[in-house]
Length: 133
Image (tube, rainbow, N blue to C red):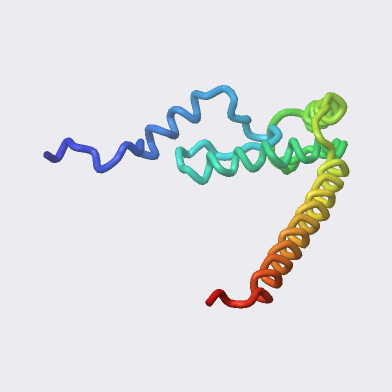
């Protein structure tokens, strides 16, 4: 009985070994670096950092997202990577996303108004009918 696992969660030390051997994790000083300590928080932070880098690229930013005071690869090389990433980005831009959100709000507000108007009209029709005897 003591050998049974409570759930399928891997212990943090085992996950740390996997993270540290995964070449896709950034190294210290590289864009998005996170300590690969095996915690769920480190995985979430890495995903957040990658999303932030994608957002910067969508905005056309050439800013390196990691603190350059951190020892690591040459800052010029990291800046060059950021510039290349921004130039190659061909997804939705921040401006396009904001326009899309605005249009979504306008459309959904209009739909809600239409639904509310038709419900009000339907209620008014049924409430003005005389009761059946």
